Image (tube, rainbow, N blue to C red):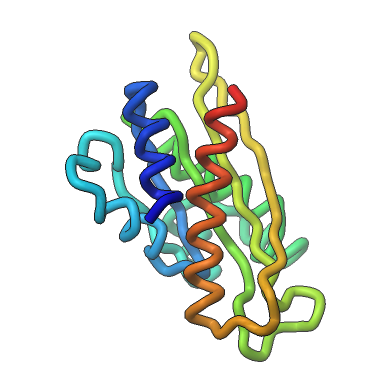
Length: 164
């Protein structure tokens, strides 16, 4: 997949590693990266935190944040990316994704995904995080939306790395 190869090239060129925290993609982002030969030098893994309780227990996302603004939000995407990066010292960058891919999504959240891209910066290892959102087409099936969401994560992570 073009997006995975683009991100792999960014990681290899910088000599850094990535880790993911995935919700609505259920591990697909990491699985796409794992198709690239030799990626084990640059891919640490992925925490698949599909349910709110798992986001809270595994990543330490505050339970009150999961209630308001809710799991499909910039705040939760940011918290997921920062937490998985803190828990993975060998990684220099982390990306997270959370969203509602339907069916039966509330109208305002139908097809909405939030992506967090966190990076260690400077000698003190400060973490900086960008959050991005995308609205996936209603015409896509759930499977197509998962594929689209995974491509967005890979593309957005590569773009954030390219911009710095």
